Length: 184
Image (cartoon, rainbow, N blue to C red; front, side, top):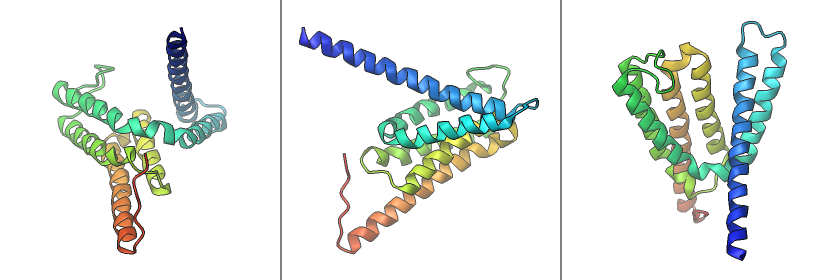
């Protein structure tokens, strides 16, 4: 009986997490829709929703960042399918030039590789800002079409800079006698 109760509680916890992710996405997309709408009467509400979503993003980052590389692998597969078909998986009317789709797929795939270290190290401020820039650039290109060509390189570049900072900082710490051990 105890095992069944634990499974039920685990199921409710998983459902709660999914519900919270959906609510967070609602904050992001709602805020972007209000802020970037041409007829928005009060874009301050959009900024407010985006600010709330950003606070939740940073506060909960330590909990979900370990799954980030896996999500990026799925995004890479999505990008490769878009490269093959020439259009968005979600909306066939959204056409992607093949070169742009190839660059995006390469950037997202490389980002998945670079973020593997987030599973074993404690995030620092540079990591947090890089992940925020990554996610913001991906969301921004969805709402502002002129950013589509830049989203992949900017997203990958932010993570690459954080990776290089982490590598330099790690080697600097080891050369000065302080061994920084990965935290699990």
